[in-house]
Amino acid sequence: MPEGREFEIYHSTNTNPQPTIYQSHHFYELFFILRGSLHVIADEEDLTPVPGDVLVYPPNCMHRVMHTDASVPYERFYIYLSRAYLQAISTEDYRFIDILDRLTRDGHHCFNLGEEAVAALVPMVDEIIEAARDTSPAATIANRCRMTICLIHLLGLLEESLTSTADREKHRMNEMIRYINQNAAQALSLDHLEEAFGVNKFVLLHEFKNYTGMSIYQYILTRRVILAQQLIQEGAKPNQACEQSGFSDYTSFYRAFKSRTGQSPNQYIRSLQE
Picture 1 (cartoon, rainbow, N blue to C red):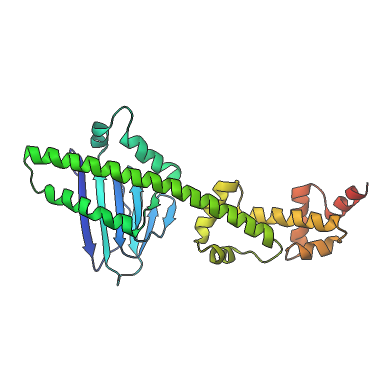
Picture 2: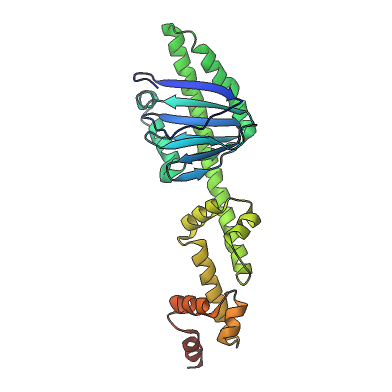
């Protein structure tokens, strides 16, 4: 976007999309996906957005879009927003830059509004694009107002999405912890969890670490050690506790047990007898 422009807005469709190179801007970008099969990298986030998703790129965010299925038409609309424009339309109580920064805090870039919600925005976007053809001073001011109203609406939807996404993640993590607790003695690979929860395993890794403060692997090991302790308390010998708590070999069991209890299995048995 050229220097001095407050905003730009586009609605386009490609039937033979080409991969983009990494890029970054000095302005904010809101990117709404209507159709297409994509793989997106935004800073450290590796994303597979779907129609109905919105990508928010703050200034200086390195991002790249790659198309995973060229047979699917690629339709999107996107908005460029300068910091000067966002500051000019802000008030003491409603600061657009603060809202956008809060949305992308912690490197979060992808929001799901749903296909119907994004499709419903198209007439509003197309109206602004069409009105921009009239460059007279009065028409320019009127279109600036349209863009501001549109932006308030969009940010409201994104904030609602962030809240609902956080609720979904919290529910998913609670369900995942419950599932691991109930199946700790079984084989629990990342691929297995991905299939069980229908969520990309790398997303699960990220969400789980944020929610619990530990990796999925470390949590599973901890639950298995707790299960092994219970089995030993009920009279199981160390090798039996190893097998029944889900460890693949005694060396792994011994190492995990001592690391988490400060005692070897036999020392733990003696402590119970004292």
